Image (cartoon, rainbow, N blue to C red; front, side, top):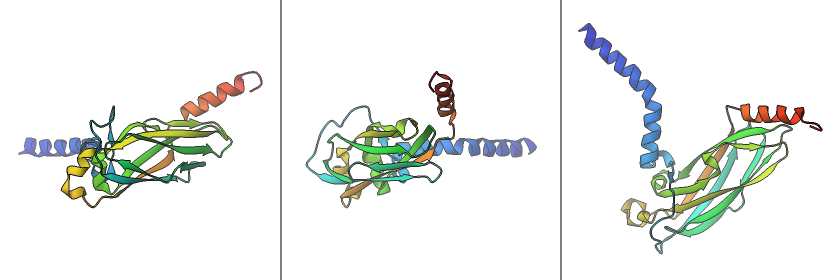
Length: 184
């Protein structure tokens, strides 16, 4: 009986540590919570149905950056590959590394929204006052047209929030190297 109880406790502890990675895998596989998909290339077909894709940008107050989409919305045919850009500017007097989180709404569209290239795949480092245009290449899976639960979806909003990256080591090391150079 003691062995059974200890096995249950050990299993519960193990599951608690595995919960976050398992949840991420679940969200990525199902699009749950507006989690987008990652694709290596565009869709195999383009269909006539169009949707409006809107773009949203937020910055956490701990990161002194401006961040905005260069266009507010685009019309895309399902399966059509599009590239849009977001603009960021570091308003501080030091190099900072930021990381972006993302989702789409309505949440049920996440499984159909595919990114081929995105600034959100890596951390972004901006020098003091530096401005940067960052691309996002995406398509909406044409399978959305075949899903009866998606008939009411005419607009998808892609939202990003930039946060100060927990690891600022890269920014600090490069700042120190620049100061050590003659004229730096």
